[in-house]
Image 1 (tube, rainbow, N blue to C red):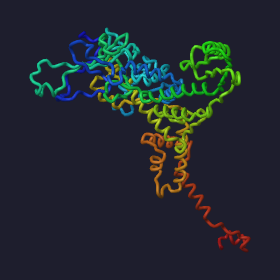
Image 2: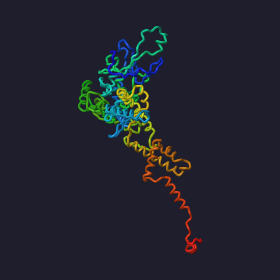
Image 3: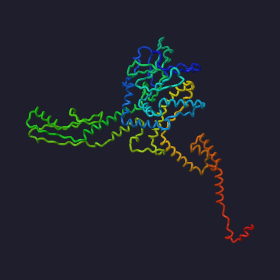
Image 4: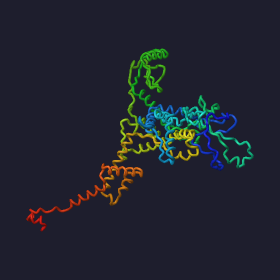
Length: 536
């Protein structure tokens, strides 16, 4: 299969940068599987790990099974809710082009195509599901469909691909004219390679040799960025929590079994068998047991308790025969287990699971409140959690980067060379929780205004007004100029009083208050007529 199924975006051959030879393979962070061209395909592609016999398919299945655990599902919900926020009137994410050095027409086209990408993903309605799927599986695949007759229209549809059915492969050419093992031109230089994806509708497992080769430009591939030590497959953020989840699940099942087995009081039945022979005595004892006992069995898979007399369990009462000459039939009671209310081990493994998922332990408590705003009230775990969410958003933005690149190149807005230059300056702004952001901004502004009020008496003596506005209020150049122009306009319109005139008025009032009052002529014994003449 020499032809790839899909399309490829080629660079212009003119103006390519000269790249010298290298003796190492180009580092890839997408966990592509290296194979050697030629021969039987299946004997070269091993999608399994020889150490733990875990393939990508097995890992994804394990991650999805973990997500069904209540504590893990709650932690994933907290992570996704923090990463994807947005009101009904807002997009969950928007493109930020303030750092991009380009014309306004190009920026307008980039914003339009970004909106088209969000529309193709149906991101406004499915943002939560898309991010949750990417976080659990650790990878995300989309097939970028275009019209072959008119590629300038851009992408027409994006179809989700199950990550268990697709794999990225790098195929290397095996040199045939090997002269000697010491030949530097053969051993030190890396042979040419071809990248493509393998898709199998039935899924890729083990030494799979059946699949469709797809060009890399036709597939949008976004992974978690977590790779194993051998860098041969992608790991999910849930990978480090596998052990903690299994430990919590086992300790919970064992706790339930222990509670059900040790909580009830068990009885000891001493059955008087008289002078019956051994066989008859055993038969008689079994008849009595089957007549009076009830058999409760706990099912760890469903959490149900059912009556089943075919299985033995810890709830079984004791039936002991007693010969003639004893005290006859007797029933005694064994007390139930003690200290059944201790849950310290459960709480420990729950906190361990949350630490493995980078979620603050305080979110386990249902009655715990989260104070926002003041730095003294925000815990260090919450700050670390916000930084973790920022890293997730940054890595998830590769999805928009890839789709936007394809859309702009196909429509001729930019070339591949231009995209390499502008892609570093394109940022994606995720909408934060409005309530949280509003409270935090209000508290920060209150602290700044309180500091400005304390520094106001020293304005003009130790600090300038511009310094207070820039350093204390943290106003940027754009905000500073905009606010200054607005104040000048409002002063001219009469909405505000000029601070300079206000200061002059205050100084005049202060000087008048400091002047001594004029004496009353009547109190000084001076005739008012003489006072008016100016003799006094």
